[in-house]
Length: 350
Image 1: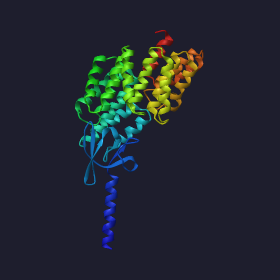
Image 2: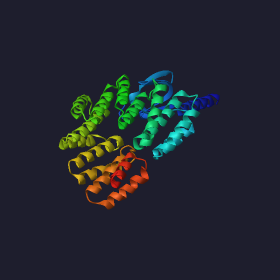
Image 3: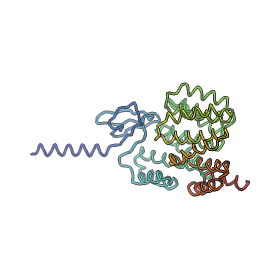
Image 4: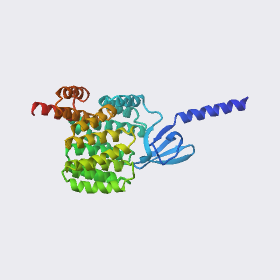
């Protein structure tokens, strides 16, 4: 009887311990084999390249590149509430809740850092759609990367910072950020994509395309590097009026990406729409933009762009009624979007 009781107690404690573990969710197709795509244990160390997890009596190193997310045991409730607000598109409230969660987790550095990065990340998303928040987002990210020089979020933080600097046209600043990014192991290709994007933004399309071609040739089929280079190359091809080549390239990205890959599909359909519209095919372009609007509307970077393009395309098709309907949606859903400001300026002749 005593042996049975002790065995039951031991199993109960083991189950409770497992339930309270940190959960490292691996990316789809991860090279690390773990039941359910999750590594359960206690995070004991983090760096910009790997996370060390104590699983039982053994330490296991998990490359940051293989991690989709980490759910830390003992995280404040405000962080779950923040994630829910972010999922519903309320980025401003989510940022405030992430900040509160970071303060509550001050004694737990991994949780606090994760919360601060989440605050910076959603603020960067706001900065991409609201120019009034771009500068504050840049300041927040600059502070984060300065404070967490070897944290696991350093790479995505630098990439977000580079996006904002590029959007603002701060070419000297973005070049410095890319230089820093390139010093992180195994990030040379990501830095190269960003450098080529800077060249494209500056109108140096032939040089950009040459670099994109190199990255596409080196990138494994289906990889983020290859996808980013393909879409960026298509944008430069459109600028050079090579519409057919750009269309073929983008349709290949759409076909090769899983339908549930919202980030790729939204960006690719918008790029396809831009290509078709520039080629004088507004009806086909409208169909591409509507894909983003109807299927990938949770992408808060690409969705307002799609709505603005839909408005412009309806105008080109001599359907001001439909254009105005979509304009009302853009006003309601993204009242501070630079895309809305551009549309309104055009309507008023400003």
